[in-house]
Image (cartoon, rainbow, N blue to C red):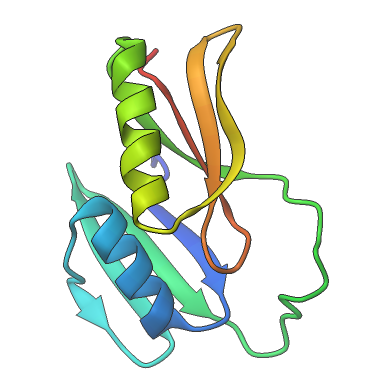
Length: 121
């Protein structure tokens, strides 16, 4: 059965968002148009940014999804990554804290899309 292998995040400016995510995750795009940029995450998994016309990014919608970055179960790794992202000027939505599944924090990209850092299951 086919499984999801591409994650698309809608953004206001694909080029600016590609710079943000490229710097954040130390990635280079593998496919690029003015409005759609893809990154190869390995293992046949892709991550793409798509500038959608007609989407109001100032509406402050309730976000119903997150991009999750799973790190080791070592809580120090979560805190270290939090500090690294803060020095890059990344917006931190929720500071590091212990939750039911372990240490976690939530950041946001320039369009308000949520990025959670949490321990690997």
